[in-house]
Amino acid sequence: MSSSSQTRRRRAGSFVPSLPTTHEMPPSQVRPSQRTSLLAANYDPIDALHQYLSVSRVAVASGVPPFPNTVNMPIVCNGHLPTHALALYETSSDRPSQCYILPIDSRLYSRGFYTDILSQASAGSIPPSRSSDGTITLPLVPYPVPHLPSAALLLLFGMGLETQINTMAWRLLPPHVIEEFPNAAAMSQMMVRLGEEEFFSYLAYNQGIWKNVLALGPQDKQLAEMVKTVWNVTADAHRKRQRSQR
Image (tube, rainbow, N blue to C red; front, side):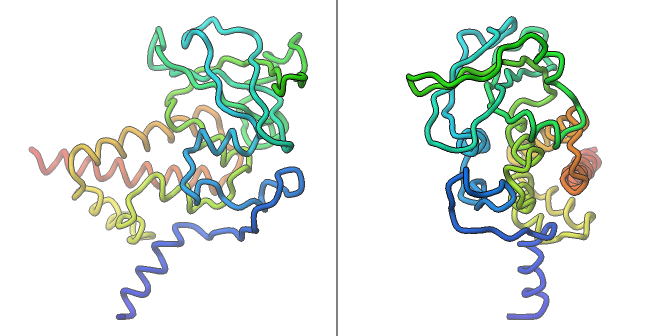
């Protein structure tokens, strides 16, 4: 194998410096930063968020505001439990047709994001409580976000439940684009070559997660800078495609 091929292969796995992992341990016995990445194990971000917080998915009767004040979530194991649930819906629609009910830990959220979405909602709300039927009743906090599909991914990293930032990069860019890091021009040029449907899927998602970063304000500078880099590369590729079609 040539030295250039070896270099490219090393870079493909190191979009940013990766962090060490451990073997699987019960959530109650390990700090979030020590856990094995569920995203690296190909979990969907929403499923990973629920798994880390020991509850399973639920839906509300209506996907549009107004929402109920609380939601009951089934507990799936003895581990780290959420303190609140967010009812997220998109700001781009006056009458949103879909929402995600996502569990969060208020302490991890407040430590991980600058935007405070909990203090006003918590005033007068009941505290979380476990029931004998194996569920936990959580305060439900409605909140609009610019991009619903990427919200769970950003929450995972912002709250420190996922720490291997490379696993986010692999969700946002194709492998052959990451191979060109840190050459942003080469990365965008590789994106130009994607098929139209694939390219516009990346464009919509990466623009959306960047808007979510701006709206929620993750405190992890490495996280924010990585998403910004991804969006800049994607936007540059979009401009190149537009110029080539004139």
